[in-house]
Length: 120
Image (cartoon, rainbow, N blue to C red; front, side):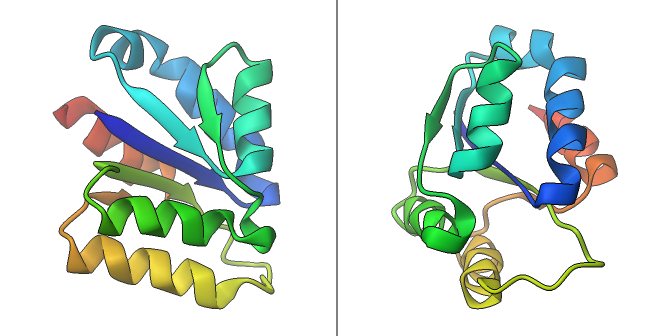
């Protein structure tokens, strides 16, 4: 199973904390993590194996959206920061839309991500 992890700058530490709290499930279920560049680098520093794509503002969100559209990505955990403006908002909207179009589970906050991880 392939899960994308993405986090805005103000949420990256929260994403790493979430991954650490669910490390056992991720390993037991043999989850393959993919990520935008900076989030992936933070996850790698915490000891996770991650396939990194470009940073979000440089096209990483679009690359992950492509994997969703191709049926390769099975779940997206995207910890968004609703208090900040993001110059790559069109790419973010495209990713969210494609998750809906292709019926891919999407969590935009830790509470929802918790429910999705427990369901696998």
